[in-house]
Length: 75
Image (tube, rainbow, N blue to C red; front, side, top):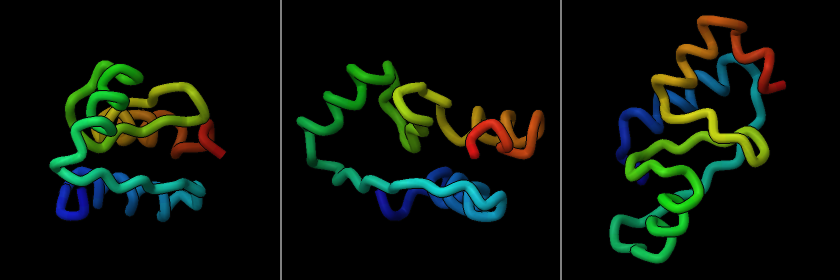
């Protein structure tokens, strides 16, 4: 979702901390991908942030992790 404000904030935060990431864009009408993501994460919202196979959560969880360790645990 290109116009997602929380996605933009998450990307900016990751970039500011020098954390490499891969972005996967999901179209609003891509039902199969949405369903697969929901099964994987239990979430229906974006962004969905993973570190390897581990779910970090959305932007709020990423920001909380940043407050804890400046995202050092993701490097």
